[in-house]
Amino acid sequence: MSCRWDLEPPEAMRLQERLRERVVLEDRFEEVRFVAGADLAFDPETGIAFAGVIVYRFPQLVEVERRMARRKLRFPYVPGLLSFRESPLLVAAFARLRTEPDLILIDGHGRAHPRLFGIACHIGVLFDKPTIGCAKSLLVGEHEQPALGAGSTAALDFRGERVGTVLRTRENVKPIYVTQGHRISLVSAVRLVRRCLDGFRIPKPTREADHYVRDLRRAYQAKK
Image 1: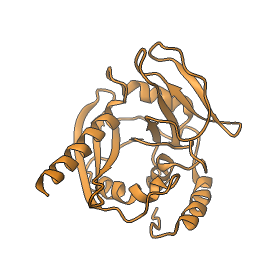
Image 2: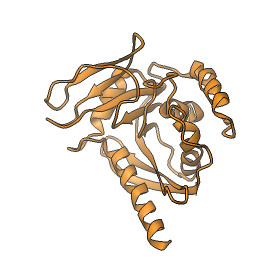
Image 3: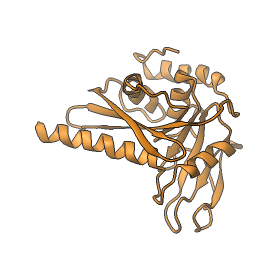
């Protein structure tokens, strides 16, 4: 599926509402052999951004491939429209992969979004792939604090609807926010995120993608 990115913010919001109807909130996948983590970093002085995608063999979490893309961000920063700012570059990085992932983890939100269509939903619908949002901070919604033990969870609710799960991945460490992007149930999303943990707060695929794009940004800044 293709998508227009050169939209004004009101048009982008309307497009999110239309594309939201395509989101599948139940399991529509078979065996997961390869999982990809994706993230983006940018240089605030130049607006140059770096998208990174790393593919791992699952469940071993052994890296298979990593790809990047670099270009200037064109869409302005507008809360709730992160996908229009970051997705074009993420799509370019995904296009360079030789290994097709069966599951995508995005450093961002899916259903836990003002219009229930965050960047994890957008990427999932674009590729028609099972996609999970793994966010480090809350965007919308309310929740109780999960218990302090690793693996504890709490429901994330927004406007009377369950939109995610608050998952404490390490004891006494801030939780993360797991939300559906596309073609996956919330139960399966939490189960698969847990299988991508390797002793750190953030699942390995998105954590390493974050490190990757930060390294790319630092190398770029060092050359300026």
